[in-house]
Image (spheres, rainbow, N blue to C red):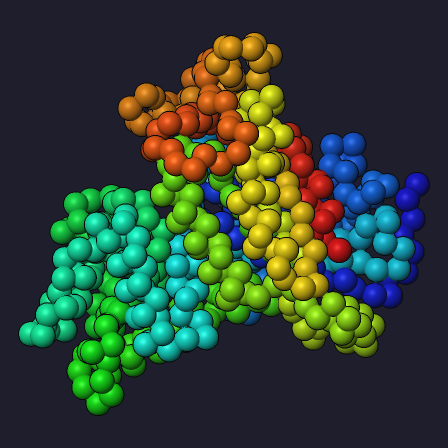
Length: 460
């Protein structure tokens, strides 16, 4: 019989999960909570021994945070037969538990879930309206995909006779074109996901531009301005600058500073979606990740960082200990959509895409993970020269239309390349979506791959 030793010290692990749209953040968190709450060391090996989780208790989230809707997300996976709805507001899950391999310490785990759309605003933190304008206009001018979507706006800002109304309307049409072209740099991000959590619908660009706001609301809109229109004391510069500053305080800082307070970061990359989307999607995701790392600045001084952290762990209550990201886990999600014969290639593609972001950071521990939080497919043996064949319940037909749940079917997936191609087109690689396979019994967590190894890395 397990016996609990007195716990004289609390280790607080603050784990932020980041990723662009549809990378599976909510699924990962739901599965992780299920496995910790209903821990079975034979199915979820936490630590090197492995450890047993005891006395799992759900705590209230920090002030100002919504509670992560674990029960609702799990119920949707089981009874609605669909993946959880995307994150539309910032939420947090807090729990306390004991581990059998931590003799005198218990753990308070805080999991942070924020909408990926807000990452597009990361450029705003630490910079003023002029700096943001320069970066945004440079991106629109110097990238072919962004330039084609915003050509009318770029032409407009070169004119002398331009009004605030024309600037805003034309910029919003550019943002609408970017959304419809699946470009991730939509800033201000409230044009895509407003402050009430309403996501922009895939409707014609003119309708999007007319119904969405480039700012906190319709009366607080702003857009980037070229240098010649940024003269102090003039309009629209002064108005845009004031609205930008309010936006940063109310939208950007709460998101980015929450992540900066974390001790570990889980960076989710949907390699299958990037391969399916073409080289432009790769470049866009790589740019967003690079910007996020520049803003979050993970790592610490290799000598003083661990010393100061160790002292704070000994001398300060866990709630008062300073944050700072010292661990980053790069995760290739949706492993179950890749044939087992190609999973080493998936990990290699993840490393190639992300390693440079971490290896230049002093005092940062990082690792790479092939992961499936909810395994929903089976694979048939690979036959040389034949397509990779999987078995699952298809979510969509060949035209992208959603199918009702039905029996399992065979389907083929693309073979992964040995390295990222220097160029490839949209649709060259195919990885069909499937329905989730989640046990109905609430105390029986789903089958997973590498989620336990990820948990061991970030909960420390």
